[in-house]
Length: 197
Image (cartoon, rainbow, N blue to C red; front, side, top):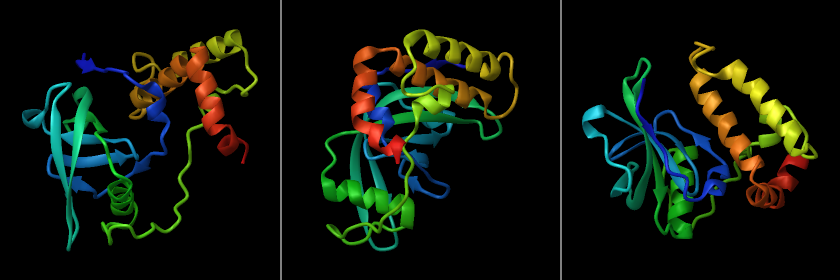
């Protein structure tokens, strides 16, 4: 059984658009995905940090380098073929130009010129209701029943497909957010337009 540690100081921040990356690296490891508020790193077990560590991450392209400060929020021990640990990092006090440069690096492979606008990129926001198979009008009982149905299907003890564990974790986070009235209201206010589009 893997030792997974999570802290959820601000669950709504996880609903940022996520850009999956294949070749993006920083000074601490390979970046599996990136948002405007943080990233998921893949690192070797020997380089695994501690939850709460504040570290500096350096990103480079052929002509530029930027440093970003981040706090380790969660760690998932090595599993699967890669034998890499996953590390969830929340960025600290990103300025708008640095955030844009990181997004550009993730999407286009270069940091570009500071202040230069990034070309428009289609990034999908997660539809938490669709993940559970309900509509945005679902009541708490319908959400609970839908989650239990999905959980039985995707629980890693019952489903040994490669993506089952990650999918189970995703639907669990969706369920936790949608069953908290305050977080659900904030999610609906922030992302209702994107879902309707």
